[in-house]
Image (cartoon, rainbow, N blue to C red; front, side, top):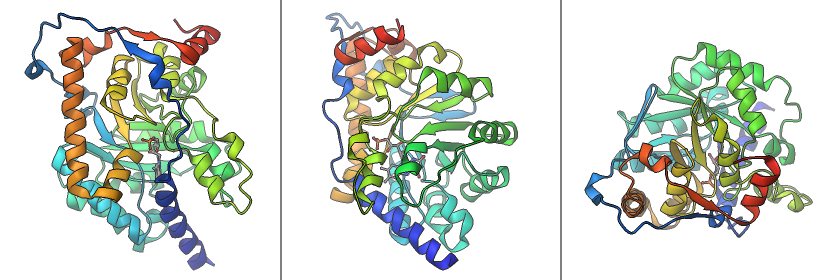
Length: 348
Ligand code: FNR
């Protein structure tokens, strides 16, 4: 029985990677409703730009990081090994996918550990669900000698997943327990459904400092899990959740008290800079990196990340923003659906 469960879990991990690479996007993107105002006198040079991010207990050479994706099967272990090489070559931080498979079955732990082996000095995020016991979370950190722990919130995914969880009672108190005991930053993250003011308020009240709002617009786990079902009857729910721009606008009142990271449907360096100007401290990329890695290989993925970082600097130069603090002061014009959302929700 346990053997079957393990096989089932490994199959699921492989399917997630496969299905995430099918184009699941819902155009158009809400990022297109945010526009910078061009300024003709930037008065700085490209070499003045510094995108180094220094946060409490977390030092990031680039605001970009490879977000949590995978591990837990032979194939995905190989993907993790390559992602770690990419992270090492570019000096950016990276997360692994949920470590539950490796924590339950020692023979799969190496599909995660390889990330530390391939990048001994790198910044690595461990990853567990919000239902785990404290010991499990501590073991996940130890498995990777992790620099931060991500706790994912994925209720819609579980509900559409045929074999998924159906009871989400107690997540908040479980997170509270974990953050009280864990000595490294704990990043509470969504998986592509975004967050609301109310979610952020509850997280702040229990002492959460780091959040990745991971919004809708990129990888869509309702779409992915729906495709894994015999009868694909949940397609109509693919628009569920807040997009990344809307989640960042919902987060505005928490920008000074919490470290808010952005991810979900970041298509290009301009989307990334828009997130930074809305106050995000770092930008997570999952499927864009996976896609380049799987289709074009490790070297091209390294090149792609270096290009993103350099092009973000180019955009900062056009804006005349030397660093993250200056970038935050750049107003974006908000139009269309995003503007309507802000008006309806009373967000200035
Ligand atoms: C994910 N994501 C994810 N997140 C998490 O916290 N734990 C996990 O195990 C996984 N697994 C996973 C598998 C695959 C194949 C993908 C593509 C993604 C979610 C990921 O970290 C991120 O929040 C979303 O993918 C949104 O970002 P993108 O893909 O739109 O850049």
